[in-house]
Image (cartoon, rainbow over all chains, first blue to last red; front, top):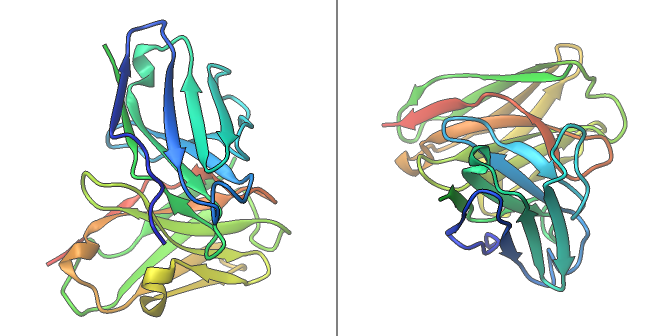
Length: 110
Length: 119
């Protein structure tokens, strides 16, 4: 089972929007609506910010939104803030296991 | 309020078996749809899902590590135990346990993690 493909890094200025892609295959992202996204600050445990492609857990800012098209899921952070600087991981259900994670994307706020 | 905490050795030798315990509160692992999973993260690297146990004792494993992993639960003690055999230096990582949200395929609450070094 291969990790999902994410860009190593993305960056943006405060107030801008950034989008992180998560590319899988027809056996994972393309087949199921079970894509989730996690935010991880240095030295901290991951935090769930999106599940089921586009749903936000209670308490998560609506500046975070998710979507999916074909084998690629996306996380968009709008109105970028300094506290959004972190690593972001996507995850998907697959035909062979409940979870596979992406390689992670570092978001830098310029 | 759901909390989880990992415990176990910080240092293991190559070829030894690692045993980690996840102690949790705020939910019952006998509630339908709930699960507890283990995820690890080598220093500076990505998350890797290892194993998951569901409320009904169904166990799932990362295909590439399946032969080395065993996950069990003790509902009365609110604990989940992960064992990993034949440890290698590449298994050095922070190991997290996490709560699988009821009927949702995502981990909504994570423990603080425990660092395990294989040397």
